[in-house]
Length: 253
Image (cartoon, rainbow, N blue to C red):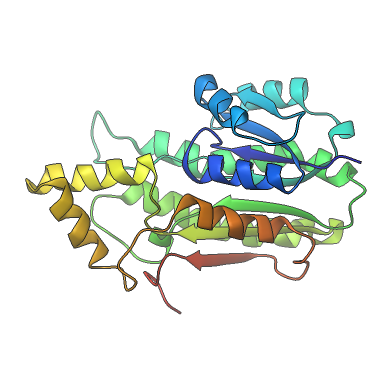
């Protein structure tokens, strides 16, 4: 019987790499994101068949409900949800404050995604099901001018604990990964913003940021995807309610 995993933010970066890896593992993948062209590009990279593209803004509850109701059913045997969609960047209070946009995508989006998928997860006959949210190392420490992003990603850590308790009786495990710098377009845009704000070349800003990282490097999306695949595998049935640091030593307990 087929098994399906839904991935938001599947059009690029970690989401795309995870989709490729999970398809290789034999899963049918639901590719969810805002930009249909990017999702179709991801779909072209996947092995196997039956993969579906769902173009929707995860922060829009009504759109999400409609899209999932029209594209997912119990026969898809949904066994996992990777709520990976997110947006980054600074925000400053005022007329152009991005607070609501960042909060809506990064914390409301995962919540809506998970709750809309919950009935399908519960209907699956697989003994253990898995939910994973992409958080951030910035839920562990602060940097200037990122109040919305830090607030939202810190909220992810609380959300996984709350849902892990609520879903434990259904054997649905809920965890988060907390990446640091990962070599994605979003990360490159973040470095460029730092370079622009400090009037430095990109290369200099990059080296300075890597200087704050004990291992001195960015992670690769494929490496994160391999860890995601493990967390969805049957080899892991004891970890739930955890926010797992995978950020080159940027935060150490």
